[in-house]
Picture 1 (cartoon, rainbow, N blue to C red):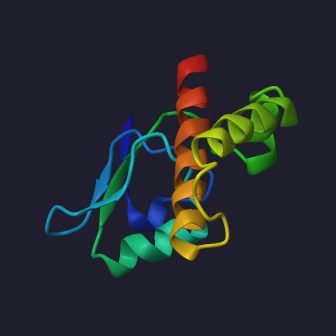
Picture 2: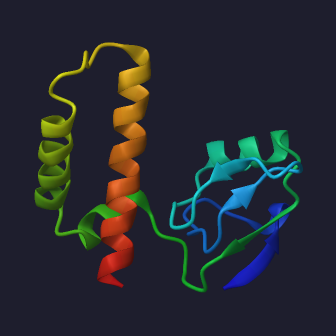
Length: 114
């Protein structure tokens, strides 16, 4: 793990600790792969530094391939769709909740394999 100033952070790095705003509000959980959008949000919330893992940045494609390609994605998606079967998939809040759940589940898969 290493602590980096926000200016040193680049997309593809993996969070080693949760990111919290100036007032302690949680912004992004451990294990997430940082994107440009995340960096913008960190700046908006006044985050000045974050703690990342000591591994090289990963691309989304490499991340996907590291999880046995699309088979792993399909398995996770199928399991989540089963859990969300009694919801309206077109509702904006449900869409967002599904995406967050999917990302979290995929991050847990990555972390459990390492």
